[in-house]
Image (cartoon, rainbow, N blue to C red; front, side, top):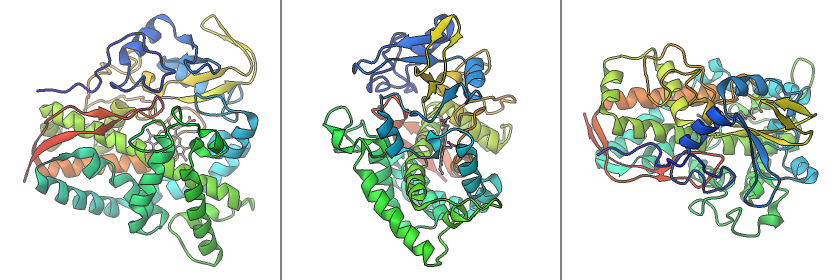
Length: 421
Ligand code: HEM
């Protein structure tokens, strides 16, 4: 029996609803929007101000690079935020040039391709240990056993924090970014009065705990201790710029949120694909792939874990005959761009030999292109390599479940049975 990656076939799903992705991504809705209404207006079911949706690949590329027209500094999520909330919850992701460029220069070395490549052996060791346990069980939840554990264990190593703190960081990262799913937080954003927390990242009290934790790290670094790549982030640049304590705390929170479940859902989508399309495992094993990096890219394109990021119009403009007003929210649906057949041939098929793959899962083309991209790609590539080495078969044995969120898209439970060497 085969289990579809998405069970949602309705072409008119309300994208403003936190339940919009409960049955998987509403791909049929995005297909229709790209075809019929490429700059579509949606009202918010919650009564908040509505938003524009950009869904075509070419439009996403064109608008994402115009940061002077579409700002990140007034919020990057769909929800309304007062200027005070934006200010209090701000990380460098919610800033524009020149501040954004300056801050990014402080942290880019710590997450560059060459820095991350030095962690390859550690990533492989974590993956091998996770697979040793999981494969011995024969039948298991692949998210619980593998996908949920690897990203934070790895990030903990890179950041230089104790491995034992990994599970605690996963819990806090989940509470932050999965703030609409009762499986991951007691403070479900639309079900409880989370108003008391509106000045905190993701309106979540978990941010307080992460701020405390970051303060402890800062104290240790200020006392001269070397803590993983975090020290690199606090080093002054050649122009003398340095990250403040407040900026560091927010940055740490952002890393824990951004580095946690995006990679997890890329891995859960990868394992879902292997379990439901037996040809893929053989292709990996016979080396019928463009390269391991390209195979990881293809899986991340297919997974599309971050559905969208929001911008705000800085002035009036017309796009596809629609009049956008200064202050309007404009959502860049990267997930939709990743299924646009005008840019990606046969986009619903996983093609490990794909030569041209201009996917947008990392926000490619814009100044905010994912900082953790090289780490995420390497993790997914190593998971693919190790699974290919050790599995002789894998199948899904019961239905999977999806995260409740219209911001992060992914499979949160995936029951599989494996045969391993
Ligand atoms: C497959 C996994 C991942 C996906 C799909 C993903 C996706 C994205 C996307 C789409 C953006 C652009 C946001 C925008 O345009 O406003 C972004 C930015 C960012 N990501 Fe990732 N991400 C992933 C993994 C990671 C990891 C592992 C980390 C941390 C180590 C990370 C840290 C960040 C940060 C800090 C930014 C903000 C960059 C900036 O504003 O300049 N991400 N990510």
